[in-house]
Length: 182
Image 1 (cartoon, rainbow, N blue to C red):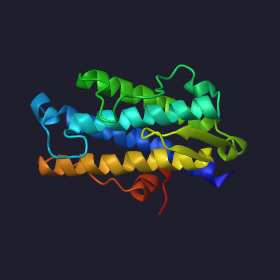
Image 2: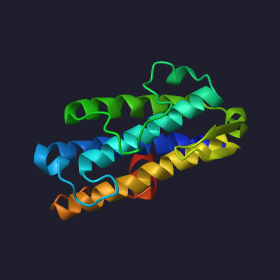
Image 3: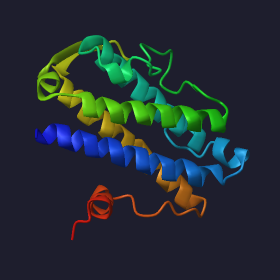
Image 4: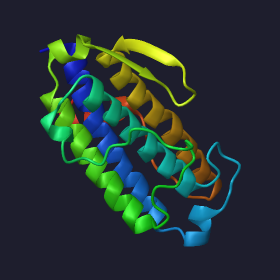
């Protein structure tokens, strides 16, 4: 088994599990609490969650166009480009939650479909600032998961400031619990 493939599959599972936990906790907040600008990169909890979903869909879209096609992404809602990285895809929290779940399911199915050969394929594109980039697919996937972790960390900080504890977020703890490791 390719270690990158195994790692990405586990990250996709962790991503889905942790997003479900976070979204459920955030659902207990009022709409005003979710929407209030708290000085985060993308303002509010809702804005930050939208940004994570937007970025995931941009990256999955790039991967599908430049390295695919991948069957797991054919029906997924992917993005080619957006006017702004703080664009609100879904103003309604229930709709945002449903779309997050759909994207997480597509992401998880996609990691199962990936092969060692596809990971080494090169992708060339212009980023949101118009800068041309070129690198192997595996690096884009690593960035996708790192980006999610970065912004989910901001979400957990905002939740703690509201007195809502999201619990342990460590990947290693998740792996130990799900894999029955010592």
